[in-house]
Length: 277
Image (tube, rainbow, N blue to C red):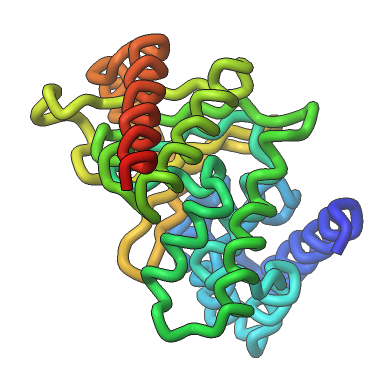
């Protein structure tokens, strides 16, 4: 579905929500309380400023007794089956974001992964899958990264723990290529990257994966991920705390220039290791 028609469809979703809510005699605040979001968010759903999460759509159906209408419409709009349900909305929001900030404790963020690195990660998690399945998952991940190559790309800031550089995903050749790529796009000033060194010891958001996204005409969101699950957070107080944690994490990290020097040094170590094996 093209972006224009998708936006029109979300506007229809919001208009229908307003219509059904008013038929039920509920204010935005009353409906919000019953589905565990603020009345302001109900208003943003109705204006197609914000897309609801699936669990909210399901609760709206239950409260308004709409026989699954809003869940079915949600699933049709978030119809990209390349992604698991918990990540589909995140992939959609990435394309709309004006600023994306990633924090990763162990692996290179998906938007920065090279084909070989992505292949190694996906294969490790799916050792019995057919080659076609692995390649499709790799293509899906790489397709997301197109947003960083567009002229209208969002501002992108990544804070990586040094473990991301040191864990040899795919072996030394793959890692050298991956780190070279990160250094290349950073040197070209397309992204900002910082590294939290092992010497930092304890640090903010320790062991946590976090993505913060900002938008032109909608409130910011925070996304965290666990084992086969994810949480897209838009409560202003929670997002503000996540942003504060990210700010503290950047303060604990090496400067961008020192981080690039470390990335390039580790890449060279991997190249030397590859040449001797």
